[in-house]
Length: 394
Image 1: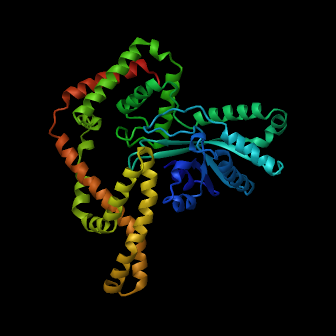
Image 2: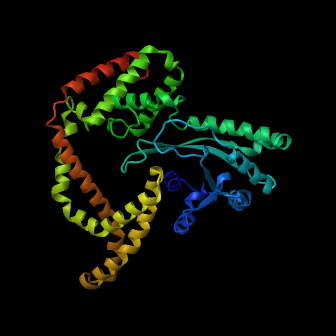
Image 3: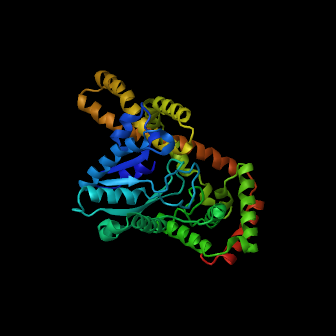
């Protein structure tokens, strides 16, 4: 999902360096159209170096034309969302200096850290925040690079990694990821999709998330008995909710009844059904086909979102052409009305999705309203009090 999100929000054209296993034969037309370039690793085959050279030559040409090249600096994508950063690879610096040598240092080439911050990258309708870091002009390292290329590449890579940390929420100890996430959920101030205060802007919630992570990184967490105890108790609290299929927002709703209000969902159900029905006609079959195909073809869930989006648009476009031809021929007086209708299909498909979400929310809120959450509420209040006492930035 990262390349699609970044490419749609940045100019000029962005080319992407992606793992070669994404370039399946049936997906090649789509990934090439998305300006993606393959990068081959050692275990991908014996001709790795030769195959990569073609991609590197294209990188050099693109940079010489002033285009952007997107490289995933960590070299690996986690299956679950983490708020951390793995050691950054040297590829970006190496490619940048290689491009400068190819053009004889005649143009400025920069490395810019970019952070993609999700509230939940696997949930449709969740939020994201793109943060650009400070640019590093590689031309400034010309003399150092000529004197000692390896040392200079290492230096630039370390600086890039430091800049990347400033663009994301960085929790240094992976064993404390859940602590950070649980504090955000209980305070409702951070970057958690399910549990946050909608009245707080996304940027402020991101700032809060980073302040909390920064405070944690400055502590000797494993040696602080009170924090270790709080961590265990928060894990137990949310694990119990998960086993009981309870959502924390409904515990909060005990004191904030508006969170259980079903008026919006009821209005959508009552008045949006005609558009939702149209959306189901145009989008249900492409959705089911793409969903089953993607989840069967890609074992790692982290790739599902982007593949479903690309294939869904492609299949939806093809699938709806004959429908529009028939509708225009038999039911519409002018062909241009059919064209307008065709371009409105994504909107009615979105309405159909929103309609199904409204039905689900209406049922969940109704069920939760009948459950006694007083014990959860008391436990939650006790945890929040401990958070406020132990964490000054909370």
